[in-house]
Image (cartoon, rainbow, N blue to C red; front, side, top):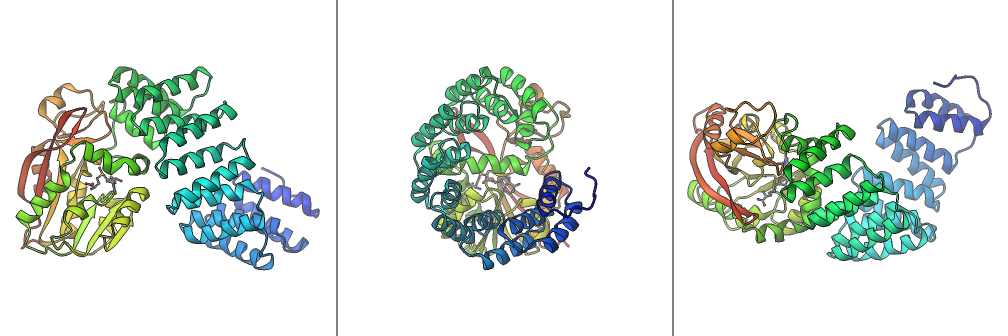
Length: 487
Ligand SMILES: C[S@@+](CC[C@H](N)C(=O)[O-])C[C@H]1O[C@@H](n2cnc3c(N)ncnc32)[C@H](O)[C@@H]1O
């Protein structure tokens, strides 16, 4: 920790404040910033330092105020505009961020960082062709910036051109061979495209060059597991866990490989990573797999609910396939909740939801006190092991006589006995995490959990949910009702 001796030289004082912010000593930096403000007039550098301090203190509004005031004094300062664009992006104000980034580029047309930020924002806002143009331009100005290669590949992928994205990452790796983030981006792209041998080859090549981190190992293990090489995948997952013990993505897949006890549900960060990465391919991929869930849920709604059931909550709504399947059945208002912003963007584009919320479904059920006639969960409870909590929360939000309609994957009795799932799984638990990172449940467990939560079982039928590796995935369609007379 630095001594707080009196410093009257403004340059030395600025340096000390920056070092303190970088070291996380924000409490000590604040009085020094006040002292610096007494020594020097307002300037863009001072405003950026003040905004950074406020941001590190978690005071987003103060950070914005600092920048607003500085920009009011110097409206053409590209650096300040770019910084405010970053802040606005962080706070979710994408159109405000876009305006600032565009203005920053106008003010400083040769600044590649400004163009890169503008391109990234255009990708997030769905203007992917413009994003690609802008990021290509940024890359010409900064051909050794790994982040721009990654952002351009993202934009190209979002623009429907995975081949260009692959070429961009390959060019990035040639220009910056030691940059692990580019390697990981290339491996992730191969995994997302289902090119598992290529992903594996890429991971092995990176490791041969001495490039290694938890993410790279997690992806290598994922590729091995997808190729059916489970024993090797387990070893690589174990290594990944050593390098990234707290990484939720790695932890979940390591649990799925049976190496550590799982936590009873998939971590939110894992779900978001998987579905944000999958969103662009989700619908065509599921159609190719013969996804039956929306049709099954439609059938149950027609059978067990009155015509025009009314207020409906779609848990884990994803890209909105259930909204399409139920669009003529009077499930209105229809509200969706999902953890993945990129899946939600696809749901929003369908224009069938009254509201969409980016949230964990457990949090929404706990905090939103509305009552629903119908609650749906299509292919979502496979991200939960223990269902007691979710079922109790659902019961509390169902209107009397309302129904919860969901699908689940079936855990066959013999699977429980023979598969090495979570190391400490008691055999009678009734659910288990499979190697693909999804949970499966036993029908008798679902019956018990439903009764324990005070829900009546209207239906539990065995159904094929989709095909995987050319075999049907065994599942259940379940309809539970909140009794009309409970309290
Ligand atoms: C396989 S998709 C199914 C989407 C949709 N229900 C359908 O049938 O097409 C699963 C979705 O559940 C979401 N999800 C998983 N766990 C969640 C959670 N705890 N809270 C909110 N959404 C979740 C994922 O982000 C993903 O979009």
